[in-house]
Length: 115
Length: 419
Image (cartoon, rainbow over the protein chains, first blue to last red):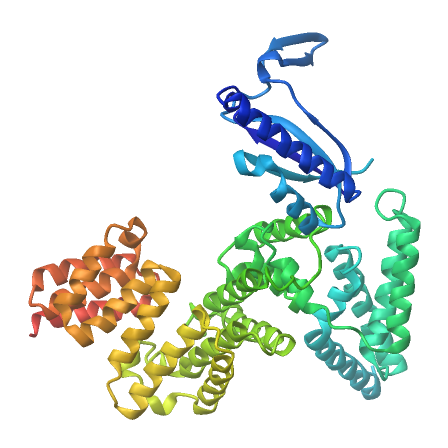
């Protein structure tokens, strides 16, 4: 099965870290990605840029509405994702727990339809 | 209809009922283990039971009814999977399923995966409140209406929640597996908690007037037995079964002939079921031999101590207090704190117990908890504060749902005027 690990963190936290801490943080994610890849579990992953450069689009009654900013303003934001292959939910939860995002934020585990 | 056919009908129904009772969960677990489609397995199985009731009266009951049902259910399951395999089930998966089911049907031995099914139902990803109802349905085959009335919920709501829970197992890929050693204690705790929740719902109808709830206690005992049979060395599973058996043994003494509540201290011990008490004690000994203490063993040990006090007349309150100390350290539950205070009152007096209750009063959950107010009333009475006791009884009476207990508290309150 494929699971999407969605990482929610306070995106302002990053800019408050020292360059040394940021380097450490990046290294943590790199190592995690490498571990997923070695295990053959990684399908895809990426980091999202901040919600300050986010744009929201809706089309209603034929009119397109474009708004600056994220869909919902929350204290923690979707900051990145890992799409992984795992045999079952327990295996996916084990990967989510190892994700650095689970320590400085929250990781949501969502099964995909696999369409 | 001839008598022979009627006999055949009755015989078929009895056999089907017996198999349902004994093997329902085993069949569901086996049919759903690979696909995790519990609802699909249940549907296929209920169709198989329907076929059995049509065929067995005519052709006679098969030698191995379990294998017969499994073969028919498997056919239904594969037919249905074929219909929708484009979206749900890949062809190789279907092939494996068919082979595995064939193998089981040939051997006529169905592996018992009920434990794995119980662990799936009580998985941490499942909503806590639905775990017990889900187990009752998928392992024991109880219908949603009966479960709903036992849990004081509308059948429609219960039905929807059960459907959602089964969807979650399938779509989120919750595994049918007994957890590995390091996660086993916590995961087993949630299985046992759910079983105990089912038992407690059944226990809440002490007169046994409500058939659905009385049966629920029996069903919870059945689940408890399954776990101890399949995990004979897990002390907490043994402890839970011992705890439930101790409670069952005293059920006939909990109400007077007039339906009034009878507290443990005043129960007629001749009404206790001593054979069941012995069985509970034996389980507790077996659990103790493992030297891994836990909440359910402590609770069962407390029941055991209360029973011994009544049977021997030996006031063992110091032992009881020690057990409550251990249980409180383990659970941190304010409810345990209240029961501990009741034991403390016997050892150190009502004044000390009242001071402990004052300490607990900061927990907002207790302000609406009847036993807290009843205990408080009792301690105030013993320390001579009649007015305070009277008020505390008022609150306790106002919070109680069970009319028999309410009458008992009212009598206690009225007796304040005598002394």
